[in-house]
Length: 192
Image (tube, rainbow, N blue to C red; front, side, top):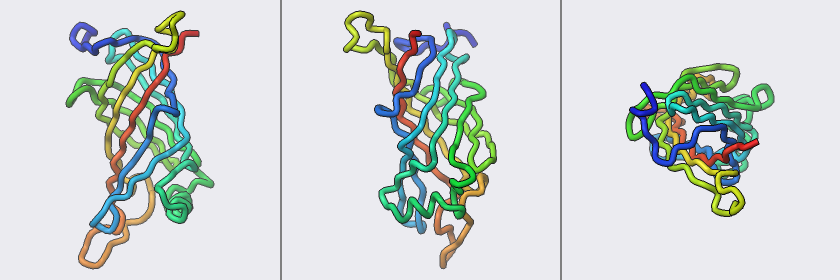
């Protein structure tokens, strides 16, 4: 597929650095079959390379698992323990894309997620939110240009060895196997 067949308004090819101050890495998991717990990771970094053909683009990111925040310090400590993320042995999670293809309302980013020493294929639905100049750079508005992306997906925590499949009376898991992932990413174009 060529760039003529895949058009993204305002698209800029280049290498971008994820801006953690204007980005979010979050997740949602069902608890006790009746509610959802949301959390986020506060420390992460990554590089996005947008190719001349958008389908030649790639992503590599690292997330510091110790930066988990679910809004409850006691729960966060338990999730950091060997019962779940085992951060003493595996303090980071990584994602590396393996391909990009049209799909859904935008694209599907195919990639490999490594968590607790296990690597699994995890596709993400990717929507480019926009590309634009930095309005505060009057000297060169494309120095520090910004790009925005939303990516969503789902993983099986049990496939990564995160926690157990503890059931509750009446059936069902105390903590769902499926974890919803939501990434809101802003990145800055590297010009040097």
